[in-house]
Image (cartoon, rainbow, N blue to C red; front, side, top):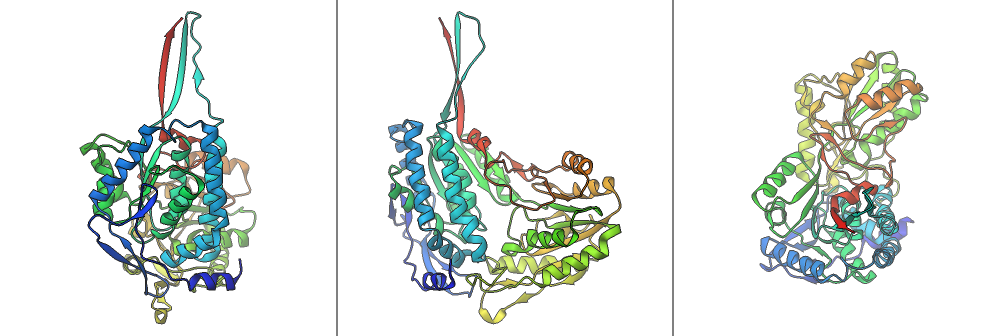
Amino acid sequence: MQQAQIDRLRAAAIPAQQLFIGGRPTSAISEARFDVVSPIDGQVLTSIADGDAADVDAAVRHARQAFEQGSWSRAAPAQRKKVLLRFADLIERHALEIAVLGVRDNGTEISMAYKAEPLSVAGTIRYYAEAIDKVYGEIAPTSGDVLGLVHREPLGVVGVIVPWNFPLMIGAWKIGPALAAGNSVVVKPPELASLTLLRLAELATEAGLPDDVLNVVTGRGASAGEALALHMDVDVLAFTGSGAVGRRLLECSARSNLKRVHLELGGKSPNIVFADAPDIKHAAKVSANGIFRNSGQVCVAGSRLLVQSAIYDRFMAELRDATAKLRVGDPLELTSDIGAIASKPQLRKNLDAVAHAEAQGAKRLIGGEQIRVESGGNFMAPTILTDVTPSMQVWREEVFGPVLAVTRFEGEEDATALANATPYGLASAVWTASLSTAHRMVRAIKAGVVHVNAYGGADITVPLGGFKQSGFGRDKSLHALDAYTDLKTAWIAL
């Protein structure tokens, strides 16, 4: 990846985008459209189709037709594997093109976007392709005059709604296992970042995925998203996003056909540094990246930092130094460590959160302001707030921006109480040289992921999902296949 290649792709015009239904681009039935505004400079990149309930209905009909026809759903797992492996190869071949397209759309720094979006997506598709012909049914331990079989079958039509921070990566966590299991899929991309998922659908068709199996309906959450959630012919809905929308989707399930709903919602993840952390400088650098990369727009971001009092001053000095070295800049420049906030409303929300925290008594150590205003884009300085208490809103509620809330703790029991003092339970981290402390904290923290002497890096082989109001269901790993398959018992008298 070279800057000249990135600059060439940055200059490419992006044609007006359509929906992708039935294996081809198609206009919204209403012909409505809306502009795509780049967070890098505030300029209009292109426009996309503003799909609504009628378009969702058309996409679901195509998906259902494909599922019942069976060219994909009843294909041998080994055959699905071949197509998905070609799909992964195509994604990898077009990785830089896709990454630049995504950065222009949502502002993630290119160094992160390249790895986290197309390259990780290719790996995810490849993982489920390789897994699906190795997942067996079961034979029950019955008496000799009975044969008990347990079959695993695809569910049918899967609806997928993904957020704007990593639309491809998170989309693939759902699309990959759903397709591998034999389902048909209808994706509703985020309004702020639809371009790469549309490109993904084109590549799937090029790889040989049958028409109608993967459909993409762009549009607004209140119209296209809700229509997908309410549709009577969608069997399962997989969503990553806010808690408020997650609750709305559960209501939609109850109002429609009781479709299964899998939710990965918000996080307010604690990053806990004990005095015996093996390398204070390294822990501080990783902690800074754990909240500030992608401008804090990461569901598992370590947005609450707990530092043991014995090393508090030393650690905070290292943290401030590591944060000050991060360069906020044009996300399509390789020298930038942090890119843009995805939208102006999100930027305003971030700034308001800082102001509210200060009004409640938090102290601003660094950052907290909008920067690079002259660019026309949405940029914010990495922000560290100290003297934060559990009663403050910034401690309990997700900001989804480059805002770190810091407090100190005395001992293990204190750290556990502070870590769990939030409605969320998505991710966490513990820094300690003590194996015993690490194991106790892994058990004590109410979160779906606990990192030890690291923050981030968990790959596709392990599940991701939350406790408490961070949702239920799991993305990634073989466990994700459970969301898109059903068990059928055959009880055969011999």
